[in-house]
Length: 301
View 1 (spheres, rainbow, N blue to C red):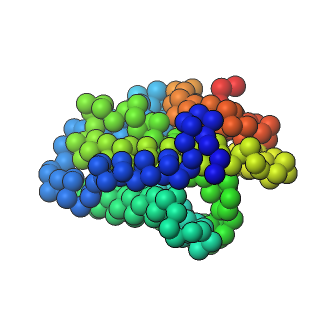
View 2 (cartoon, rainbow, N blue to C red):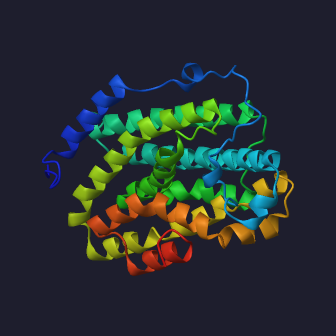
Protein backbone atom coordinates (compact mmCIF):
# COMPACT_ATOMS: atom_id res chain seq x y z
CA UNK A 1 0.00 0.00 0.00
CA UNK A 2 1.13 3.55 -0.70
CA UNK A 3 1.94 5.73 2.27
CA UNK A 4 0.54 9.25 2.38
CA UNK A 5 3.05 12.01 1.70
CA UNK A 6 1.35 14.21 4.28
CA UNK A 7 0.47 11.79 7.06
CA UNK A 8 2.90 8.90 6.55
CA UNK A 9 0.00 6.46 6.95
CA UNK A 10 -1.60 4.04 4.53
CA UNK A 11 -5.24 4.47 3.54
CA UNK A 12 -6.09 1.41 5.66
CA UNK A 13 -4.44 2.94 8.73
CA UNK A 14 -6.16 6.26 8.13
CA UNK A 15 -9.52 4.46 7.75
CA UNK A 16 -8.93 2.64 11.05
CA UNK A 17 -8.30 5.96 12.78
CA UNK A 18 -11.55 7.39 11.42
CA UNK A 19 -13.45 4.25 12.45
CA UNK A 20 -12.27 4.73 16.04
CA UNK A 21 -13.23 8.40 15.87
CA UNK A 22 -16.71 7.41 14.72
CA UNK A 23 -17.10 5.14 17.75
CA UNK A 24 -16.06 7.95 20.10
CA UNK A 25 -18.18 10.74 18.60
CA UNK A 26 -21.28 10.01 16.56
CA UNK A 27 -24.87 11.18 16.95
CA UNK A 28 -28.40 9.89 16.67
CA UNK A 29 -30.39 12.98 15.57
CA UNK A 30 -33.69 11.38 16.59
CA UNK A 31 -32.67 11.75 20.26
CA UNK A 32 -29.78 14.24 20.12
CA UNK A 33 -31.97 17.13 18.94
CA UNK A 34 -34.90 18.39 21.01
CA UNK A 35 -37.67 18.15 18.44
CA UNK A 36 -40.28 19.23 20.99
CA UNK A 37 -38.68 22.60 21.80
CA UNK A 38 -40.71 25.56 20.46
CA UNK A 39 -39.35 27.75 17.69
CA UNK A 40 -38.34 31.30 18.58
CA UNK A 41 -40.40 33.60 16.31
CA UNK A 42 -37.66 36.26 16.39
CA UNK A 43 -34.71 34.04 15.36
CA UNK A 44 -33.43 33.14 11.91
CA UNK A 45 -33.14 29.70 10.32
CA UNK A 46 -29.95 30.69 8.52
CA UNK A 47 -27.59 33.40 9.76
CA UNK A 48 -28.71 36.65 8.10
CA UNK A 49 -25.33 36.98 6.36
CA UNK A 50 -25.89 33.56 4.75
CA UNK A 51 -29.26 34.49 3.24
CA UNK A 52 -28.86 35.12 -0.48
CA UNK A 53 -30.37 38.64 -0.49
CA UNK A 54 -28.46 39.94 2.56
CA UNK A 55 -26.62 43.17 1.82
CA UNK A 56 -28.93 44.22 -1.01
CA UNK A 57 -31.46 47.05 -1.20
CA UNK A 58 -34.25 44.50 -1.44
CA UNK A 59 -33.15 42.92 1.85
CA UNK A 60 -33.11 46.32 3.57
CA UNK A 61 -36.67 46.99 2.41
CA UNK A 62 -37.97 43.71 3.85
CA UNK A 63 -39.42 43.57 7.37
CA UNK A 64 -37.66 41.37 9.93
CA UNK A 65 -40.54 38.89 9.65
CA UNK A 66 -40.04 38.69 5.87
CA UNK A 67 -36.29 38.25 6.33
CA UNK A 68 -36.83 35.41 8.81
CA UNK A 69 -39.33 33.76 6.45
CA UNK A 70 -36.86 33.91 3.56
CA UNK A 71 -34.19 32.38 5.82
CA UNK A 72 -36.65 29.58 6.67
CA UNK A 73 -37.38 28.84 3.03
CA UNK A 74 -33.69 28.92 2.03
CA UNK A 75 -32.87 26.66 4.99
CA UNK A 76 -35.47 24.16 3.76
CA UNK A 77 -34.14 24.43 0.20
CA UNK A 78 -30.62 23.64 1.41
CA UNK A 79 -31.76 20.66 3.52
CA UNK A 80 -33.82 19.33 0.61
CA UNK A 81 -30.78 19.44 -1.68
CA UNK A 82 -28.74 17.79 1.07
CA UNK A 83 -31.16 14.85 1.18
CA UNK A 84 -30.93 14.29 -2.58
CA UNK A 85 -27.14 14.61 -2.52
CA UNK A 86 -26.75 12.11 0.34
CA UNK A 87 -28.99 9.77 -1.66
CA UNK A 88 -26.68 10.04 -4.69
CA UNK A 89 -23.55 9.53 -2.57
CA UNK A 90 -24.99 6.49 -0.79
CA UNK A 91 -25.96 4.86 -4.09
CA UNK A 92 -22.48 5.47 -5.48
CA UNK A 93 -20.80 4.08 -2.34
CA UNK A 94 -22.91 0.92 -2.41
CA UNK A 95 -22.09 0.32 -6.09
CA UNK A 96 -18.40 0.92 -5.36
CA UNK A 97 -18.40 -1.59 -2.48
CA UNK A 98 -19.57 -4.36 -4.81
CA UNK A 99 -16.03 -4.40 -6.23
CA UNK A 100 -14.12 -4.10 -2.93
CA UNK A 101 -12.71 -6.38 -0.28
CA UNK A 102 -15.41 -6.58 2.44
CA UNK A 103 -12.70 -7.12 5.08
CA UNK A 104 -10.80 -3.91 4.21
CA UNK A 105 -10.81 -1.06 6.73
CA UNK A 106 -11.60 1.44 3.96
CA UNK A 107 -14.72 -0.55 3.09
CA UNK A 108 -15.73 -0.60 6.75
CA UNK A 109 -15.33 3.16 7.00
CA UNK A 110 -17.34 3.69 3.80
CA UNK A 111 -20.15 1.65 5.39
CA UNK A 112 -19.86 3.81 8.50
CA UNK A 113 -20.07 6.94 6.37
CA UNK A 114 -23.10 5.53 4.59
CA UNK A 115 -24.78 5.10 7.99
CA UNK A 116 -23.90 8.68 8.95
CA UNK A 117 -25.37 10.02 5.72
CA UNK A 118 -28.56 8.01 6.19
CA UNK A 119 -29.03 9.54 9.65
CA UNK A 120 -28.35 12.98 8.17
CA UNK A 121 -31.16 12.42 5.67
CA UNK A 122 -33.49 11.62 8.57
CA UNK A 123 -32.25 14.69 10.45
CA UNK A 124 -32.84 16.97 7.46
CA UNK A 125 -36.29 15.52 6.86
CA UNK A 126 -37.31 15.96 10.50
CA UNK A 127 -35.93 19.51 10.50
CA UNK A 128 -38.05 20.44 7.46
CA UNK A 129 -41.12 19.06 9.22
CA UNK A 130 -40.14 20.78 12.48
CA UNK A 131 -40.01 24.26 10.92
CA UNK A 132 -43.42 23.72 9.33
CA UNK A 133 -42.38 23.85 5.68
CA UNK A 134 -42.55 21.62 2.63
CA UNK A 135 -39.41 20.15 1.06
CA UNK A 136 -38.28 21.52 -2.28
CA UNK A 137 -38.80 18.54 -4.59
CA UNK A 138 -36.77 18.05 -7.76
CA UNK A 139 -38.69 18.16 -11.02
CA UNK A 140 -39.11 14.96 -13.02
CA UNK A 141 -36.13 15.61 -15.30
CA UNK A 142 -33.99 16.46 -12.25
CA UNK A 143 -34.99 13.21 -10.54
CA UNK A 144 -34.01 11.30 -13.68
CA UNK A 145 -30.58 12.99 -13.61
CA UNK A 146 -30.22 12.28 -9.87
CA UNK A 147 -30.87 8.59 -10.49
CA UNK A 148 -28.31 8.47 -13.31
CA UNK A 149 -25.50 10.36 -11.54
CA UNK A 150 -24.36 7.48 -9.27
CA UNK A 151 -23.57 5.48 -12.42
CA UNK A 152 -20.96 8.09 -13.32
CA UNK A 153 -19.43 8.36 -9.87
CA UNK A 154 -16.48 5.99 -10.15
CA UNK A 155 -12.80 6.18 -9.20
CA UNK A 156 -11.66 9.65 -8.20
CA UNK A 157 -14.90 11.23 -9.42
CA UNK A 158 -16.83 9.95 -6.41
CA UNK A 159 -14.42 11.56 -3.94
CA UNK A 160 -14.27 14.87 -5.79
CA UNK A 161 -18.08 14.89 -5.93
CA UNK A 162 -18.26 14.08 -2.22
CA UNK A 163 -15.93 16.97 -1.39
CA UNK A 164 -17.88 19.40 -3.59
CA UNK A 165 -21.14 18.34 -1.96
CA UNK A 166 -19.79 18.47 1.59
CA UNK A 167 -16.95 20.98 1.92
CA UNK A 168 -18.73 24.13 0.74
CA UNK A 169 -21.58 23.58 3.20
CA UNK A 170 -19.12 22.57 5.92
CA UNK A 171 -17.05 25.72 5.53
CA UNK A 172 -20.11 28.01 5.63
CA UNK A 173 -21.56 26.15 8.63
CA UNK A 174 -18.30 26.47 10.58
CA UNK A 175 -18.24 30.20 10.02
CA UNK A 176 -21.85 30.74 11.10
CA UNK A 177 -23.11 28.00 13.43
CA UNK A 178 -22.45 30.12 16.55
CA UNK A 179 -24.50 33.08 15.30
CA UNK A 180 -26.67 34.22 18.25
CA UNK A 181 -29.55 35.01 15.90
CA UNK A 182 -29.94 31.35 14.87
CA UNK A 183 -32.72 29.05 16.04
CA UNK A 184 -31.28 26.67 18.74
CA UNK A 185 -32.38 23.64 16.73
CA UNK A 186 -30.45 24.88 13.69
CA UNK A 187 -27.32 25.45 15.77
CA UNK A 188 -27.54 21.89 17.11
CA UNK A 189 -28.13 20.45 13.63
CA UNK A 190 -25.12 22.32 12.26
CA UNK A 191 -22.86 21.10 15.09
CA UNK A 192 -23.84 17.47 14.51
CA UNK A 193 -23.38 17.79 10.76
CA UNK A 194 -20.01 19.56 11.01
CA UNK A 195 -18.64 16.98 13.48
CA UNK A 196 -19.52 13.96 11.36
CA UNK A 197 -18.82 15.51 7.96
CA UNK A 198 -15.31 16.42 9.13
CA UNK A 199 -14.44 12.70 9.11
CA UNK A 200 -16.03 12.20 5.68
CA UNK A 201 -14.02 15.10 4.27
CA UNK A 202 -10.77 13.77 5.74
CA UNK A 203 -11.46 10.33 4.24
CA UNK A 204 -12.19 11.74 0.77
CA UNK A 205 -9.14 14.00 0.87
CA UNK A 206 -6.85 11.18 1.96
CA UNK A 207 -8.20 8.95 -0.80
CA UNK A 208 -7.61 11.60 -3.45
CA UNK A 209 -4.08 12.38 -2.24
CA UNK A 210 -3.19 8.73 -2.73
CA UNK A 211 -5.04 8.31 -6.04
CA UNK A 212 -3.99 11.41 -7.97
CA UNK A 213 -0.26 10.57 -8.36
CA UNK A 214 -1.25 7.29 -10.05
CA UNK A 215 -4.05 8.61 -12.29
CA UNK A 216 -3.72 8.37 -16.04
CA UNK A 217 -3.15 11.71 -17.72
CA UNK A 218 -6.47 11.78 -19.62
CA UNK A 219 -8.41 10.72 -16.54
CA UNK A 220 -6.72 13.45 -14.50
CA UNK A 221 -7.56 16.09 -17.11
CA UNK A 222 -11.19 14.89 -17.15
CA UNK A 223 -11.62 14.94 -13.36
CA UNK A 224 -9.78 18.24 -12.89
CA UNK A 225 -12.14 20.02 -15.29
CA UNK A 226 -15.37 18.13 -14.64
CA UNK A 227 -15.52 19.43 -11.05
CA UNK A 228 -16.31 22.92 -12.38
CA UNK A 229 -19.88 21.71 -12.94
CA UNK A 230 -20.23 22.00 -9.17
CA UNK A 231 -20.23 25.78 -9.52
CA UNK A 232 -23.22 25.63 -11.86
CA UNK A 233 -25.08 23.37 -9.44
CA UNK A 234 -24.46 25.58 -6.40
CA UNK A 235 -25.36 28.78 -8.23
CA UNK A 236 -28.69 27.15 -9.11
CA UNK A 237 -29.16 25.87 -5.56
CA UNK A 238 -28.31 29.09 -3.74
CA UNK A 239 -30.58 31.17 -5.98
CA UNK A 240 -33.39 28.68 -6.52
CA UNK A 241 -36.59 30.59 -7.35
CA UNK A 242 -38.78 28.37 -5.12
CA UNK A 243 -37.75 29.92 -1.77
CA UNK A 244 -38.26 33.44 -3.15
CA UNK A 245 -41.75 32.59 -4.37
CA UNK A 246 -42.66 30.94 -1.07
CA UNK A 247 -41.44 34.03 0.79
CA UNK A 248 -43.74 36.24 -1.28
CA UNK A 249 -41.05 37.79 -3.50
CA UNK A 250 -40.82 38.10 -7.27
CA UNK A 251 -38.65 35.00 -7.87
CA UNK A 252 -37.07 36.12 -11.13
CA UNK A 253 -36.15 39.57 -9.80
CA UNK A 254 -34.93 38.21 -6.45
CA UNK A 255 -32.69 35.69 -8.20
CA UNK A 256 -31.21 38.40 -10.42
CA UNK A 257 -30.45 40.59 -7.40
CA UNK A 258 -28.90 37.70 -5.44
CA UNK A 259 -26.67 36.63 -8.31
CA UNK A 260 -25.34 40.18 -8.67
CA UNK A 261 -24.81 40.75 -4.94
CA UNK A 262 -21.16 41.47 -3.98
CA UNK A 263 -21.85 40.18 -0.46
CA UNK A 264 -23.23 36.90 -1.80
CA UNK A 265 -20.11 36.44 -3.89
CA UNK A 266 -17.93 37.04 -0.81
CA UNK A 267 -19.81 34.35 1.13
CA UNK A 268 -19.45 31.90 -1.74
CA UNK A 269 -15.74 32.61 -2.21
CA UNK A 270 -15.12 32.12 1.53
CA UNK A 271 -17.10 28.89 1.54
CA UNK A 272 -15.25 27.45 -1.46
CA UNK A 273 -11.77 28.63 -0.43
CA UNK A 274 -10.69 25.50 1.57
CA UNK A 275 -11.79 23.15 -1.22
CA UNK A 276 -10.26 25.37 -3.92
CA UNK A 277 -6.93 25.29 -2.08
CA UNK A 278 -7.07 21.50 -1.80
CA UNK A 279 -7.93 20.99 -5.48
CA UNK A 280 -5.00 23.23 -6.41
CA UNK A 281 -2.74 21.30 -4.01
CA UNK A 282 -3.48 17.89 -5.56
CA UNK A 283 -3.57 19.18 -9.13
CA UNK A 284 -7.30 18.82 -9.74
CA UNK A 285 -8.18 22.42 -10.56
CA UNK A 286 -8.13 22.49 -14.35
CA UNK A 287 -8.51 25.62 -16.49
CA UNK A 288 -12.12 24.89 -17.47
CA UNK A 289 -13.10 24.17 -13.87
CA UNK A 290 -11.37 27.33 -12.67
CA UNK A 291 -13.25 29.37 -15.27
CA UNK A 292 -16.60 27.85 -14.23
CA UNK A 293 -16.00 28.33 -10.50
CA UNK A 294 -15.03 31.95 -11.14
CA UNK A 295 -17.95 32.59 -13.49
CA UNK A 296 -20.43 31.25 -10.93
CA UNK A 297 -19.02 33.40 -8.13
CA UNK A 298 -16.96 30.90 -6.09
CA UNK A 299 -13.51 32.17 -7.04
CA UNK A 300 -12.36 35.81 -6.93
CA UNK A 301 -12.56 37.69 -10.22
